[in-house]
Length: 120
Image (cartoon, rainbow, N blue to C red; front, side, top):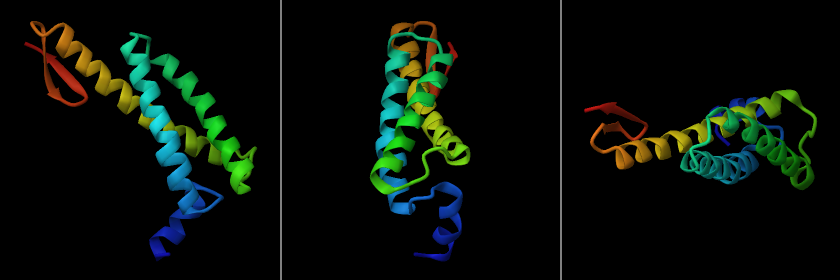
């Protein structure tokens, strides 16, 4: 492991960097991204994403505890997981909402980036 990875690992996870990348980033982040897209697709408000990401973060922390021996009731690692999943969920939400707005209201809005739109 490199020096940078050794210094970052205790700040990110208590189970190791590989477990963090696979479980939190790939599996949890993918689920969060798809959850954000699903909420946007059904026109649900953004605040629901915060609630769903709290549940998903608890599930990811439980899998970390049950499968890899991580700490179950660590508020710090829960907050790290929640922040990462929240960012992935928000990314999915904004990409889908932008696609919806520029597709369904193409005469009113145009895409300015994958996450934003503007009035014509």
